[in-house]
Length: 531
Image (cartoon, rainbow, N blue to C red; front, side, top):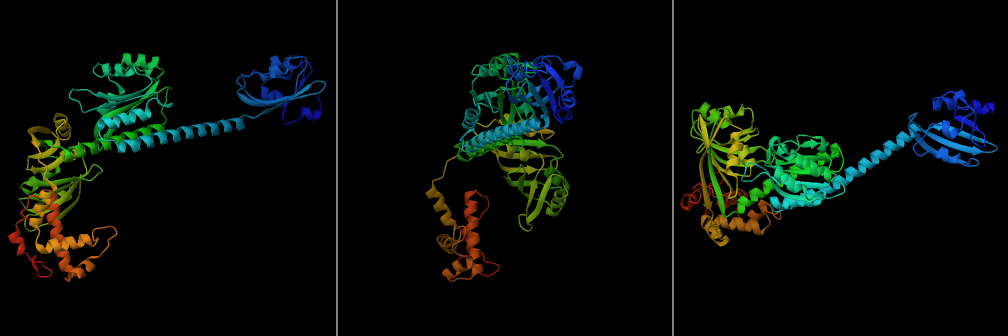
């Protein structure tokens, strides 16, 4: 071998035209992890480390070798080698270690595949989310989730379970995918001794991952066998939950072990939250338009309830006049008291789990606002989609009155409230039939409550696009149109708006006593409603 080749920084192997190794330089012996004496005189196709493809054997497997260049992985030495074969009277085999470059290429390719998979999954989930938001009820939501996810190249089977069921178990509300016989096994297993991952997800409120179904003895045997027979190897069960209330579960099956990346889990958990929100919104819409509702009165006892503590501190009764869910799990409460409002205000201001305490009025009929941010009966009722009508808190106990859709599961609701306090009792349950008031009757009744001046100001403001966004007219422009002072216009407008809002929400105040209002005067202008 030429001295220049012997000292070359890359591996060089010299062979005869028949492929017998004549010489080898030090760089080649280092790469191949061998000694020169062990290779000289041997056939290169036998002595060279074997790759999976064995291209080198094919090059020398003939009357004479042929020129070639290739890159292959050699497991015995755990390296990628770039091999170039030059042929003259014999052959020179040049060998270089290209492992770092190949590993970089493989890493890039793997990341590209992961990115492509994440993008496809995100696109799929985004499509499902859009359709879930527009779904009309729980069954529609379940079908949408299953039809869009189940049977795809990524997820082989999907089922959605509904928690709201008359028996103590989940119900399969919808399913989709290739493993059609799996639904029957799931139905059977829901009432069995062993618990499905979906049942655990509902009970714990947390996502459950089974990385290898066939090897997990906690999964019912019938489900494991059918899943294995259909090539389903792993599954992910995600609660359909919103603001701490679990309405059901979606369980997704993959054809791969460990078939769910962290990004997929995040995406599917987002889907679970949005579906939970959609279910809750649907329950509230059902309540708004229902002809029949269930009114429940729940009694609770627990000294840790903030409003009970406030009633005890003030030695009074604290009444809940209304409650508005804020959208993040917190509930804004509007309260009155028959005792010193300062004592109640001070106690609630220092209470953990209560924020935004403020007095709205402190003279006649004191009213104040307080927001509950921690778990409490009021937040639980709101999370279940109930409308809280009123409540009363004493120093020891409380009673809350709420409305549910007629198909609402009262027992589960009471159990959910009981989980937040020491003692809970269902005091009353009553089915109420609503008699919708015709729009014309509502308008006539409201019209009777408005004074002439209020009606004029309200209609002028409306026709002037005062209530539009952006406004078509300012308050000064409306006042100028009516040839009255701006403060007078705003006074009459506020009184008219108050009556409109109270009529809509069926307020129990005596704001419709026209006689008393006709003589009321604007403290800023000294003008009466009729002026």
